[in-house]
Image 1 (cartoon, rainbow, N blue to C red):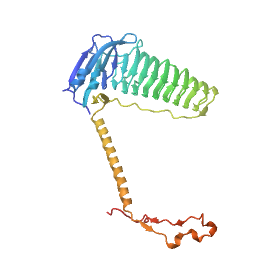
Image 2 (tube, rainbow, N blue to C red; image 1 turned 180 degrees about the horizontal axis):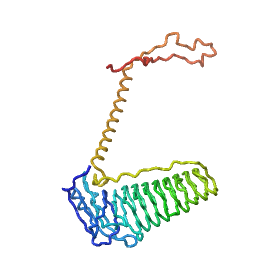
Image 3 (cartoon, rainbow, N blue to C red; image 1 turned 90 degrees about the horizontal axis):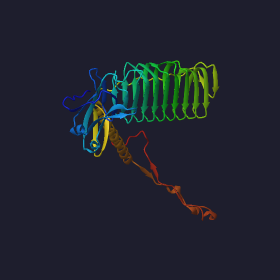
Image 4 (cartoon, one colour; image 1 turned 90 degrees about the vertical axis):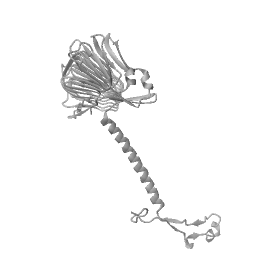
Length: 414
């Protein structure tokens, strides 16, 4: 559900130079679009809180090789304020095809024709924190595409036609990376995961590239790629799996020292070096030359994954309590789901408590019959021979508790 922000406070920032090529976003609910009428970047910040508006900071700086960027964040004083519930949204409009650097720690949506689109430029996207980042376009051309995920946020790239001399991804956090293409034209595909984040890439691989797939921890790497490639180097040292059998390069070399499983293919040469507990599986028609330790299987299900829907245009909701803060992007539907979950937990807890009490009352009302042993059941050591009189115990049959049979009902009557 959309939120009417027409009555909110707003701040507009206009870049001082036309060579802005990047964004550093430490805010949530960031929506980046292109505007062909603009000569410089424009930021519009809307909020229903004066405190949040005062804490907003927008500045210009440089990163890396002197790339000019705009940085958006909040001053530290915001996090000490006593705020119950406030909302804000960040609209960023850029000249067409000018963004080559993005560093985001909050939820961010980048629309079509925002990223640079030329073979002379490189695109660097970094995801930090818990925010999810969505990149979408119809086509993209670049010299190099670099994706890095260092937090728990996910990065989804949905660009049907993608062409770059090199495509690389590095995951050092728990966030996932997915690249959805119809055509991926490159000379080098280099994918690495060093944490629990997973990778999924789909499309037709073109350009006959070299492919490198490495998982050093628990993160899985899965390809739904077709096409041809020169060589494929697969390294598994952790518990993560490398599911790459849909891609049959001319030569494939596998090094498996962890517990993760490998599914691979090749057309000319296949070599496997296995010293861990994971399995190395060669899938499909055997290559001309096969060496090392591996299993063969004729077929393996190709991984399948659908792209997530781009988040709707809704503001971030910021909750504050004392000196600590939390920040989540939500809408009324999300708030309703959260409230419903709390109510459900309370109901379940109440039912459990009442059920326990009811059982206890039923047990307390069960009639009991105590049977005292008869005289015949009394044994006295004097009946034993004299030689046993000093050691034979006195035994008395204990009272017996008789509980009525289960077919009878006791307790509270209806």
